[in-house]
Image 1 (cartoon, rainbow, N blue to C red):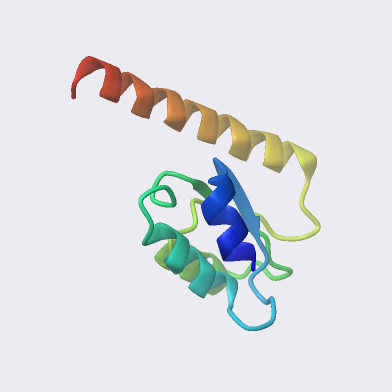
Image 2: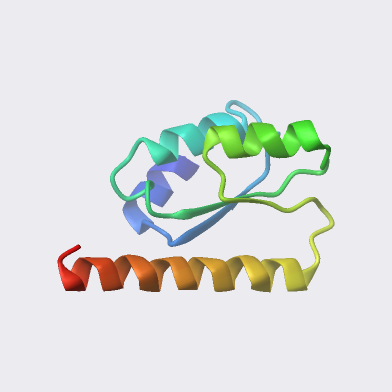
Length: 98
């Protein structure tokens, strides 16, 4: 249900838990990245664990950021600033014909 909602809404930023029922956050990230709109969305992994291997797996699955719970609001703000910067750069490339 969440994937169908995201496909209709096409959010710019998606924060995902890694351990939901049915599909893992890693699987969901891969499914999102396989869509035209999902290639450009910012994906934030929001698990309860944060070992180096967890971060590596998140990056390999297509996440842009890995923020371990409890997530500090400043980390969220930083991630959103990065997304905004990336979107501006992408828009500039498209408008310049690059």
